[in-house]
Length: 216
Image (cartoon, rainbow, N blue to C red):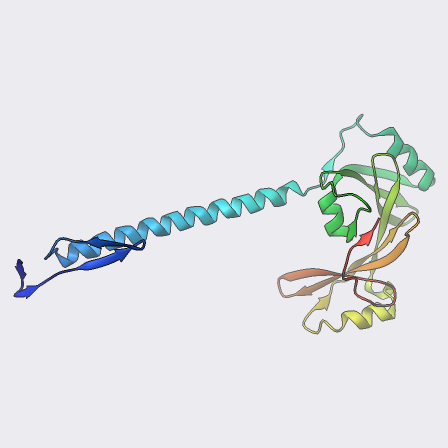
């Protein structure tokens, strides 16, 4: 065995659960260099994996967007229904609304449907001094509508319930949401903020937090 500085050197390292023997008396600097290269390669691989994961998550998030309906492609059933439901209103900005986004932003779920690719139609409606947002299905059935309101219009029970989130503050703009049909419901979407964080809380008029989505 060769001598290095009067000392016998035998270095054995374990890597990837396999024993790897290095040559006896391998220079320490060479070993350190090899280890640094291996660590650098692993860091690069991990970084690349994280970037790919982030881009994939962003791509999924980007899919949940509202896209305008092209002029001339508006379904007649939806346009006729809007005129019937809001006869004195001005409708604008008819858009496609993905079912996942509808469920997330309105806290709803579709009765008897597991198809997550269903497209709904969202429309902005101005009636007198009030601006509504309404959601229709492809057959012109009105599913939900909502109106922006200020904190002063929230029921006292809702305000009292939200105060339980002691570290959060209410943003001034909230929503009162109505679902239509045989299971008509009225509930509130209260916006909260803590520093740079934001979240929404859905409550009924009695101040009960809705732990599950409303069926429409």
